[in-house]
Image (tube, rainbow, N blue to C red; front, side):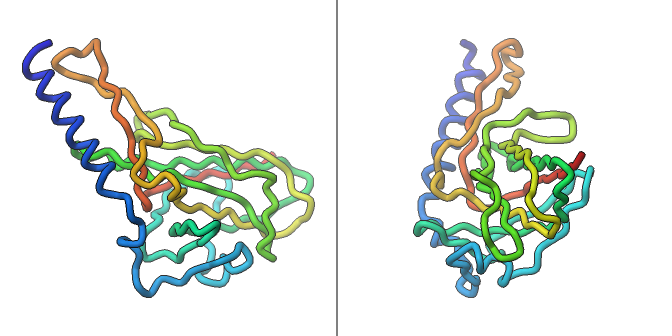
Length: 206
């Protein structure tokens, strides 16, 4: 192995390890004036929901200034997104949590997501599952989730997206990066969970 390649691998390891070890305590990031929802019924009271546009990718930021969801003693900043449900159609919701991949520190918000009705009752039978997604020309490394299903009533529903801070500081995904010293041997780079980040959504119905 060439010296330049070894040095690159060492630097990557040091930076990734430092990134993960520096994010153990979410409370150190919390804004002192954040509102906290202690139940799903309170989620829509703290901040107005943004509207999801059908058949269109939309970018959003979840930040430390957003309200906090507290479930099972885990705190997470969250955002709510509204859309109109229809009993005659099948809906698909896709979510990409996009990597902050500038520099050596590669972080991504590992999301949790679920759907509630206007009364705050959870209508999705289980939380949306997330795993490492595919990169592309217009999308960086990401954590991807998808939900497909129908609704029992014609009414407004709300998609709730928050950080899954059970994974704080842990590796939650990875991607292969090109090593220009040895281009046929890609480097597997780990993504560490960070409590806020950029997300992309898309909703369709048919």
